[in-house]
Length: 366
Ligand code: F6P
Image 1 (cartoon, protein in one colour):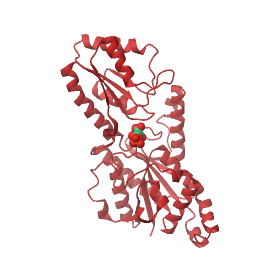
Image 2 (cartoon, rainbow, N blue to C red):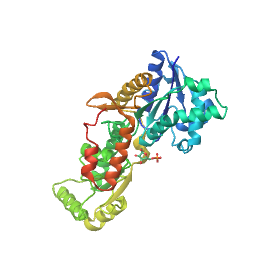
Image 3 (cartoon, rainbow, N blue to C red):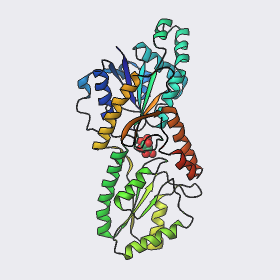
């Protein structure tokens, strides 16, 4: 019987539970054993009760819930070779040779490093007498498949990441709530949203709520932004708009690479326009709650595809990343997608936006 393990890593995102359910049930339906690794990579390193065989009913009732039923973590130990050696030992001892990792770019890089080191790790375990040469031989190939669970929607090679749609809904709900009180009091609200180095959540939320002004990392404002913004807001007020909504992506920078602080924007509005202004940082509200239908479906289809891929993996095939492009579940090469994602972040940091957009070209396919 093939044994398929899976873990969630990095920040949680809505839909991760749907992916857990799909992986377990599709693996069982295909005659495999499914193993949940609890607490992300920490579970792989620690082993024992943190790697648990799952039955069909263990994942009942989680499709519609937020967060992750098997925990997630950012694990320091797995970043060290010694941690990965323990992880290798724990997997081999249980007879597991297939691993599905659902996380962001950092977590997926870790997975690929693990795969590339696999044979060396096995040899080290044989040399130190921890496993037999025969056991190592039976586990020569580690199949790795990546899935992207992240609210930031920042991965190259896929148009949507699991959880981004739900977070967008959460943000839009919050801005709608703020809008009503903002209108009543004719107030300005500056709303900080998550996204790390990616402005997708802020941009889409602004479109969906008709925000007055927006700050995102991919488009630093002109040097004259204070005047420009005030002119636009004054016009909106003259046209009868009672509220002001400004959306700030947490990673937004100005042209000198300085973070755009909500308090600074508040100061500008208070001093230049005399607006009664409030700042709202949405924080982790954006990562919680019930997943949208879109994220449940995306994660279910991708979880199912991940099992198919992990079972058909071979030594000379690069690890795949389960993606979503043009309304279809697709695969792209995991490491290329991760490297391009890091390259986009670097290009944005260097203010080379042309390069960043080229790298994010949707024609990038496996
Ligand atoms: O990557 C997901 C994310 O929610 C980012 O948008 C945010 O910057 C970060 O994680 C917050 O991390 P933590 O939950 O560790 O505070």
